Length: 386
Image (cartoon, rainbow, N blue to C red; front, side, top):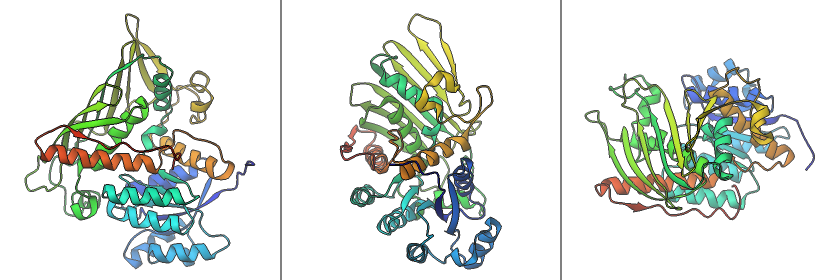
């Protein structure tokens, strides 16, 4: 397919006033000048929706009352939206993504992809029947050194995989949040967040990071989910043991009640020849420690990391890049696929969403059975990235 650098026309669902992730999506989409925001539904309240859209400079006729109206109207326009970004609470992901695929739009969807495994599998079928792209926003795989770690594991530089330790811990829900905290309110509501709290919100990120870097499916989980705040319905702390298909063992800790930890995502991947250590709060460094040899600090330099990873780097080594750039790398890779047909094997798709929900389902079942080892059904990825 010929190169085409024309901006993709982007619509957004959710992500209005007070929503952190909506602003992150908009910044990331603009970073490489590959998208133009043309339409949206940002809030359920009509007045708040229109007011927020005015702050973004959108034309009034392209600010819609609901997502159904947006999809229908944009499909009828010759300059209608081509991609829709879904930045809403979890319970809206499935109906919005399904409708967008059926309307012929490419989809960028926040995680977890759906509330249930059944919804995830139905969405996977719809994506498979569509010729549209589906991007699940596991943004942490956008970091260049995460991609480089994946390449090191795949090329055999750490040897046979022995163990994986991954953790994602935060402190922000250690106490009962204020009543007007919108971000906390829906995450603690099972009607909007689903059956998993911390597990679905950040545990899925930790799970996907381990799966992404190692390249190995997780076959079984033994999990213990608890809520430390009295009266809280959903889990806010998760401890889990993992069994990988190739025989490696792992552990996963996700918590939103860990005082002193702001956004501590880190992973250790250990083989019989070397180990790797990466942490999101220092994302421009990867520690490579070979057996019986000095450890090496690998930094984010495009002249050292290879062409594929180097494409995710915008500024010279030593100049810090971070969270927004990682998001932008996923948007850039999606634009490459849509406009020029470039293959981007690492880009998380709908199968990652199915795998994540099967992990959540198995972890919940395991915890309810006092940590009993519970199998995770494998995902068939033979049909491709979608």
